[in-house]
Amino acid sequence: MPHPTETERCIESLIAVFQKYAGKDGNSSTISKGEFLSFMHTELAAFTKNQKDPGVLDRMMKKLDLNSDGQLDFQEFLNLIGGLAVACHESFMKSAQPQKRM
Image 1: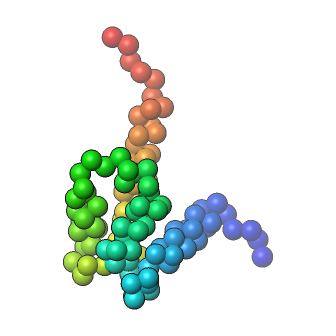
Image 2: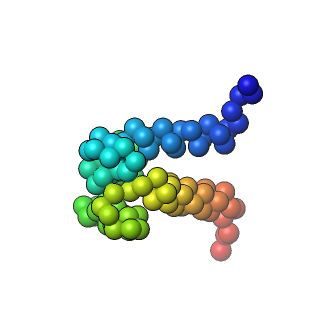
């Protein structure tokens, strides 16, 4: 069997991270608010430490929870990961552009 590609390994990692946090509060197919907070503080610690607004994580959870069931399913979790990836990519592209002199 061939070795997985880099993209396949990334997908496997995303699934593994989701499964690591999902189910601690009961349902293994969703991430509860408590599990979400644990995920954010552990996996995205730099992001959460830099937040001045204490309500930002609650608002993120509500915005991500598209069906308003108080849980994040895998698709909703991927929306978070995708949004963060886009923001990181945009930041990288902005810093890679040569600065214009005035």
